Length: 218
Image 1 (cartoon, one colour):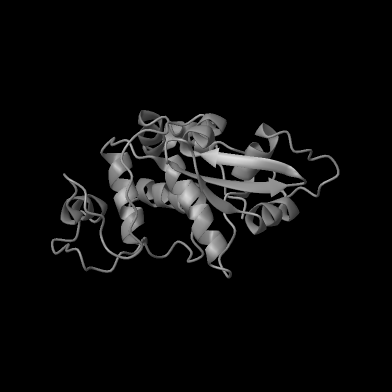
Image 2 (tube, one colour; image 1 turned 90 degrees about the vertical axis):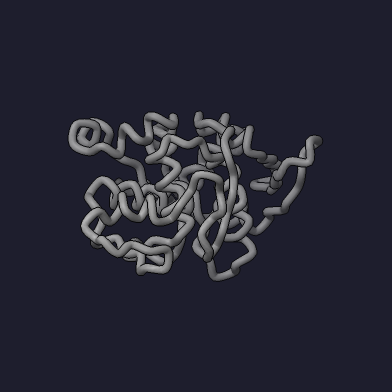
C-alpha cells in the first residue's frame, strides 16, 4: 500500500539506475518517504470517482474527511515535482504499440546472454542485471504497483523500462491516476500509492493529526 523509497546516498555511487531516473526528473517520485494512513487511503478509494476537466482531460475526484480532492495529471505532477508531459499508452496484457518500440530490442538489453529473445518469451527477473532488477522493483512499487510480486515482469513494465532506459518522456502521473481507478474497480486489488496519497492529502489541507501512521519501508 505504501510503496518504498531509495537511499540516494548509497545508490548514487553504486548503481546506474539512479542516473536513468535523474535523466527524466523522476528522482522526487522514488524519494517520497512520508508515512501513509491506511484508514484515509481506504476512504480515498471508497469515494473515488472519475471526472474530466474543462479540456476533457482525464481526472478524478474523491472526498477524505469531508474535504474534496480533485486530481488530473498536471496537479498530481505538481504535487510530486515530476513532469506530466510525454507519451501515454497502457496495455494490460499485450505489447504496447508505439513508434520506435520493438520488444526484441529492449529484451536484448534486459537479457543480453539469451540469443533467442522473442516477444512471447517468459519475462522473469532472476536473469536481469542488478540495475535492471532495481529499476523493475521501483516501477512495481511507485509507478505501476501490482499485487503479483517481483518474480515476473509484465509487458507494460518492460515497456516502461524501455522508456526510462531510452530517455523517452512518459506521462507517469496519468498512468498513476488510471492505476488508482483500476485498483478501485478491482475490489480485491491492493490499494496503491499510500505515501503518495499522503502528499495529496497535505496538498488539499486534510488534517492528519490523530490519524494512525504507518512508516514507509526502504
